[in-house]
Amino acid sequence: MLRFATLFAAFACFTVSIVAGFRIIQKPPPPLGFWAEPNIVQLNEHYEGEILRGTVRFRNTYPTTIHVLEWSSTCSCTGMSVTDREIPPGGETKLAYEWHIGSRKGRSQETLSILYHFGPEQVGFSSVHLRAIV
Image (cartoon, rainbow, N blue to C red; front, side, top):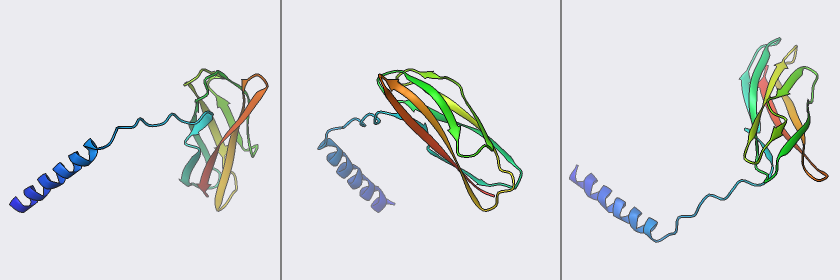
């Protein structure tokens, strides 16, 4: 036990001396954009005919307000809605989805997209991927 305590004390002194030699650097700000968090949603295993429901958060890291123009999916089997159409800088909106699996089998993916306006004649596009095994 004494050997462990001595080893631990030596490691603690070594760790403090390393940390003392470096400056603490702040985490860089996120890149500018309108990001889905997370951008891939793994829904695991499900059965044919199930309806998968959930929400995905989109965050605005632009210094200007974002105006959501429209949202869409890669299949008509998915319904969606957003909580807010105007998102201030640092704000967020939630995209609620309802994915009707139907008679799919195997690995399935659905892409949900948001088209937005964030400045004079500037339009952006952000998406999230839903993945499931049926």
